[in-house]
Length: 232
Image (cartoon, rainbow, N blue to C red; front, side, top):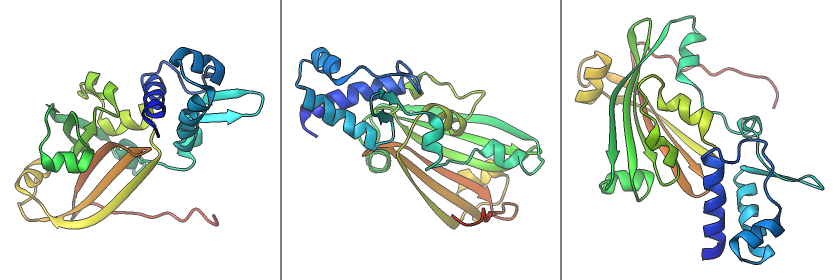
């Protein structure tokens, strides 16, 4: 996109992420937006087209443009909720915030993972029946998700908040077996170097990183179950 397209795209994106335009809300027509931004109608159309590609806006003939409903995005991409995974096994779930840190000037490693600019790092522990089940170490890109800065995550984990509040257009997930680091071992109540099962998940909104999470489970107690939902 050109500088004008990008500026308009980012402004409209901000209105969606902030909730100014809620899911299902009608979006002003191209003529009105062109007048607001003092640009041509094709310039607005290209910016809206990018938001359509990202799954954030739905265009319907004669009905105009609307913010995409959450359900339509979840039909394509689904991020599991750790609470639900535990409760689906009939176990009692609990959550504890360990650390919440603003990274105004992140170092090279964080920038490589989540992009330039400020980031929020959240570390938390999810338990099942009181026993450590998952240690979550998450980075959130505040340039893409500015609303995260206002969340304290004391009573609700970033996993749940992000799934409910923030759209995304693509995700990757890597699975690995690793030895527990000193911190991971301390949080999970296991010996340093003991086997852990690690899920590394990243999400984007268009080309912009949303979050990266390192989700660490005790290798001796965690099971990954794949369910066959039938054809398709």
